[in-house]
Length: 394
View 1: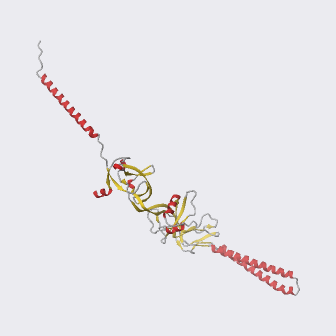
View 2: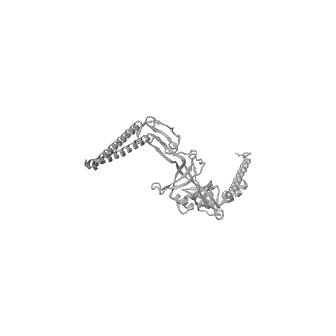
View 3: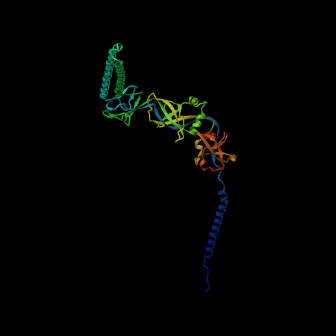
């Protein structure tokens, strides 16, 4: 039996071979393309272009703030000196009063009666003295004529001396009664503002009461107290001229007061007192500044902050935004050789607006990176761009 080949077998094989050839060619092209692109992927990216600034020395003023408490120049507790019922209250809470103005009235009837009784005792003592003197006048010629013995005259003289002593005692009692009667009217010892009234009309009051009737504050001028640590106090003394502490106080500039809402009080104050010793518990020393307060805007018990100014000559400053904080230390990236950056720790000596005043770590002429520090590493290479150039381009 004769076997005949399929008429299309040869053509089919030919087509299959063509397809295989095309696939092989495409694979070769892909291989060549991947081999040629591999070196490009391995190339390092170009160094980043970052703004830099040259550190320069200049004179700057920094400010330090310290929590403070405010008190009137005079803060008086108003307390009764005698016991009794509170008959009248002449003032209201928060009112301004003048020195000598009546504030409270205690029922004075018992004290008027005591004064009258003391006056009666004084009159009786004075009458006894008159009687004793009459006895002396009667006995003196009789003794001189030896009609009676001098013993009777001596007794009369002694009685007169006792009467004089009784008069002095009675006068003292009268004075005490007048003082107690005067204490029934409680007046303001100084001009100032009345605090809360803790006792109302009709209340029984006594000098032994735990609470005062009220408080009175003279706030025409106020004292603002704040504390300096030992290190700050040493720097404070070294900053200003003068050989003694009194001289330094005279050379101190005016200070500012920041109120509780961080607004600045319109008037400047003057530091006029430094405590004689450090507090052993806190390690701080108390300092006092005085401020005028004619309008009465400040009251005893207010809080705020004292702002002290410090002058720095030939100081180096860097923008706060150009620093990085790590583990309680502050760093900048300084430009080193071959445009490589170096992380440098700096010591801060204060703040001037948005700039740090640098005490140690940099010197004039050093260049620092201003931004883009988040992705920088020690020894990384950059293309420095002067800050002035960057501003000009913008």
